[in-house]
Amino acid sequence: MRIRSVEPFILHAPIAQGSISDSTNTISHWGIVGARIETEDGLVGYGFTGTHAHLASDRLIAACIGDCYAPLLLGEDAADGDRLWLKLARHPALQWVARAGIAHLALAAIDIALWDLRAKKAGLPLWKLLGGATVDRLEAYNTDIGWLSLTRDALVAGCTRVVEQEGFRRIKIKVGHDDPMIDITRIEAVRRAVGPHVTIAVDANGKWDLPTCKRFCARAEALDLFWFEEPMWYDDVRSHAALAAATAIPIALGEQLYNADAFEGFIGAGAVHYVQPDVTRLGGITEYIRVADAAHARRLPVVAHVGDMGQVHVHLSFWHPATTMLEYIPWIRDCFVEPIAIEDGHYLPPQAPGAGCTPTDAALQAYRMPLRG
Image (cartoon, rainbow, N blue to C red; front, side, top):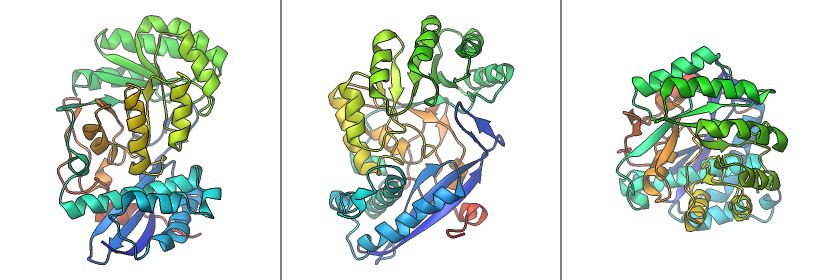
């Protein structure tokens, strides 16, 4: 599988709701910045990272794929997984700028595309290539009905609908108002509507400080929250450890961490209970596996962040023994040849060879953005 070409692409797919907000962002489109890798025998692999569809920064990621990483891959054997990851991630010049951020998003797209190629070459879906499913049913938790921009009535109606009509038994609600008691009243309303047997998680997207989180948790513990996700600034290990020691609500985080060392800092400090790696930020599947294995060795559950909207994570979640559930946000599912599929609140295992990242021709035509200004 000698690599013949590496081509970046950018897609901006509209969100069905028109616009959504959490505590720190308001967006109307989701960015798909990816790499198309073709081998000399004509096999094509795709990988991508997820963004907030900010074209200027998306172009930086695409340029890193095309200008920095692509020349290092031409002529290489796509089957050499770990060796190629190390060649890119530990390149003497690029490691100065490539340990996080833009360069790691670009590395993620490349690494996922290489895994996609390997699975397609084997004629297997990625989860089978990795060793097969370790769960019979992969439960989904629905975040797409929990946005902060929804009124309380709309929030309650959406949560009730997916529980009663679509079979979801797990939901997640965004929090992060300046006054956390507003969030308490919203959660109370949802809890009354869905009853005691539906799990409710909450996510602050890094908005609050430690005193605010403690105040919130003191009131929220009675509401039986499944976890409190990203309560504070993403890199603040000490404050997360302090909060974990102060509340009975489990702490979840990881979508904003870019390497295995960052996860080790939180895990080692007892600052996280649900580990949430994101394959699109970690530099791809190769590093994701390292993080998931490290968490599993500590007997911590792994619940991937669905920043790629589930296309790759559904494979990893069916396969990895530390995982029994996965977030559901279906914004870009129709952009792919084999979209993620849900039945009665559970994911169906993908069946097509590859990592689920092959975009449709229609998506490539409708949503493609120019690589240069």
